[in-house]
Length: 521
Image (cartoon, rainbow, N blue to C red; front, top):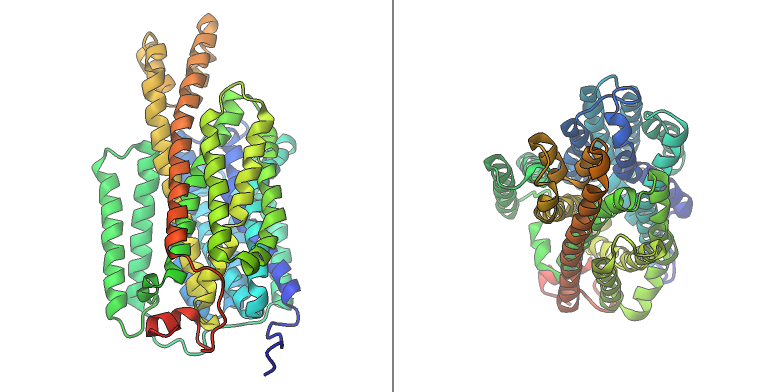
């Protein structure tokens, strides 16, 4: 074979477009529901859902999605990635239809869990199909487009959700998925080639089971602790139990002669360093997006649609810089590009410490643009390093590991930073709420949303409580932002110490990780 011959699929760029469509609908659903929560709580225009039911309408999706990502990545490699993608899209579309017409909160929670099953089947195979249809020399550029699509979907979810709610009923935020899914199924069937691991070996049933139980337990504990506090036995039982089962999973994989995940990969910097970097970045970024939405809608008084539009510069930066990151890596190396990306991200997160209730709003959006530019130069080189360390037939494993770390770290970021936010807020607002009657006082101290609800019934005393709640929330936001920036800065240390620099041309045809594990350069 000539060195310059392209080994990619002839329709690879059209296939990438189909995969981006499939990916958009899944990532959009992670953010689009947030703007509909107030409507769902309304007994007339929504379902009359309680606070706990609203939380689980989001978390049932996240819990199932995170728990099954790794398993479905492994099974996609074995059973066929195109098949998994079509089945996942069909499940996602059906569950979206059921969600749109749910008659009570219980039905919505169940339908959202089914959406999580479909999403977990879609997400890992999109990335593994990219690894199989693109020549290694073009793969980094394709992954840059893929990462840009993720950033775009995160940012336009609230915009799209707000626009739909201004013109249609709450179910429209789910119903819009259905035509997109139908289009995706048709295009996947027509364009995407089937691929699988040609030598899958035996199924590691115990490993698959342990990964699901461990990830579900850990994710449940993180979510529950973030919502109701980490001072309860049930939370720590779930977290410690999940970690213990995952430790059992690691021990089992080390002993198994047919592991679903070769955990020795984590000894190799080319694989382990970018996985850690992805986890730290999403821990920091998702926590900031969580408090940013409350800041815009409550402290600054913007509508859901206006708030979503203020996040758009983040998406624009992703679209502009993510596809170009591959060229930057070729020129300067993954270590340099990732370090600069992390530095920009940490600087943007740290700057939120100086945002208050009167800061010109363009500064908020400008910081979003800087953060988006930073993350656009983190995710593509990290993902490319992970995927290039594995042979093509094992691409689903690399994709699943990357996406699982991202989901769990994002949930952990929201939980931990949300807990910090709540603790500082409750402490600071206590004095202003001290003179209120018992139940009302508890609601005002619980969250800034509760304080606004209480203020609506206070009459002349409302402005004082609202001002105190805003000041307390902004103070709490500063603490959460500072922690986010420190977490992102920790990623810089990891990258400088362990991330590979400029790519080297190897004479050995094996993937880089196989050579490193074997002790050859």
